[in-house]
Amino acid sequence: MQTLHEQEPQGPQTGHSDTLTEGIRVRVGARLVPDQTDPSEGRWFYLYHVTIENAGDRPARLMRRHWIIRDADNLQREVRGQGVVGKQPRLEPGASFAYNSGCPLETQWGTMEGWFHFERDDGEQFAARVGRFFLAPTVAEVPELNAWVENLVPRQP
Image 1 (cartoon, helix red, strand yellow):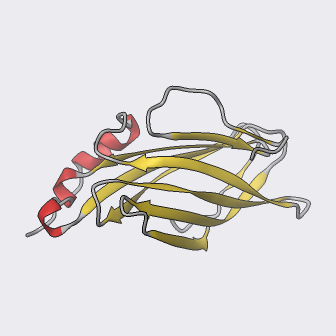
Image 2 (cartoon, rainbow, N blue to C red):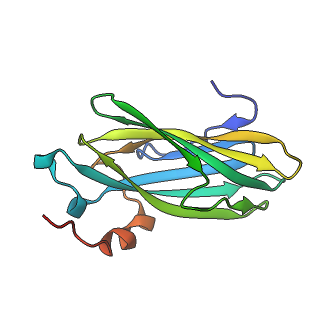
């Protein structure tokens, strides 16, 4: 259920995510990394690209993350931690922060969703939703990940 302060921008059905909560817009897309994937061993590896933009009028600092990851067998795991990729970025209005990360699965596809917990300068805290996105071989291309995938070292047998 969406609140007055939460919107899901309309866009094409790409398998990616684009959400807006309390002025924080979070866009995420993923792609399979073939060189890090071995179906015969039940291992699929996905990279995902996250862009967090402060579309509001008040600064906010990303303090924590909370991911819910589900595989094709509906097995769920949760990942919680401080910041993202070792950082707790402070976003001024109009500023954005982007990063890449990865997720291994034991099934061919799955989903991720969650929250980024923010704090404003006045101490107000809120959770910006990260809408569900797909970890699947057939999702739309994520151009921001292409160069990163090409530079990965292939997995050694």
